[in-house]
Image (cartoon, rainbow over all chains, first blue to last red; front, side, top):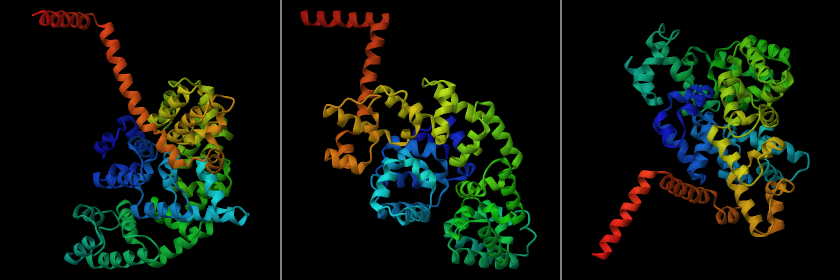
Length: 132
Length: 333
């Protein structure tokens, strides 16, 4: 596990902090981590963004690929674009489930906001995902 | 036993994982036929209520006791957790991340909520926090109390800590030494302890950012004269540096210099930006590629380093002179 994290530029010190946040990552195989890196690259994350996202959010590594796929597809369907930029800013979005984003947007829509405006607002202010 | 091995293999466990489960306390006393029945029954049930095979394997590897639970017991547990204020989907999400919840009694969970309320959280806060960090149900209340006190010693008020952990409960996952180390890392970037307290109160997720991530952000804003952005508007640090760089360069190209008086231009909504300047985010990011800029900068920095070494090393200087003299001699020949 450590080897592949070091390969993407994460220091030993940061790895131990990641393990504090999510001890389960110690049990992950090289293949499991590679799959998560690949997912980020599919979203056009460059090497620095991959390093930033993983080193700042170890929980992402421990999530199921199915849940991550559902989340990404839902976000794209809702109109979020340039996900690499959004996730680089707020890597913790990757810990959400698709239904949580849908529910949050529905609540705002019920108050009269348009989907397009909500997505623009969330994309511009990635800290808003913390309200979810 | 053979049939048990076969079913474990079919579900997707390795032999090693299977042996660990079989030898787990509470499971090893089962007769093979009873365990076989439980494995088949619980696997089908968990899949029927919304877990994937991948989730189920991961959960039972962490918490093999799931195989000891009866269907009635699991159904009752889910209903009880829902009554605490979670939706069915949220219960499933929480238990995927922290399957041990199935081993907690509902009384223990209620007690944790009550204890957290005494610390200053509302029930709503606790529900929200545990949705993103269900591990809180596994933390001793003394540990949480201790963490709050440790954070107070670093310069936060009790109210600050409550507010920060509501927004970013993962703070509870870090040891106080890690928090101190993160503070030191930010101090090295040119901020005082007071500055750091202020910025992390506004954006507690700073404690989650890795050192390299935060350094990249600060280095960029330093380079454009906006060192104080992290203090006056920390939340803007959540915008990707790639986008801030692209916008900064775009403004520069059209004759707008970004400084402390107009830095908000870097963070306006995309829709507004497009309407005002007629350039999409894709076009902007392609035209002003931050990664390419960094690569170029690194090469230049490296070049400068070599020049500095050559200038400051007597031996190399001598060597250069020798090479120069040699080349001159060769030309004469």
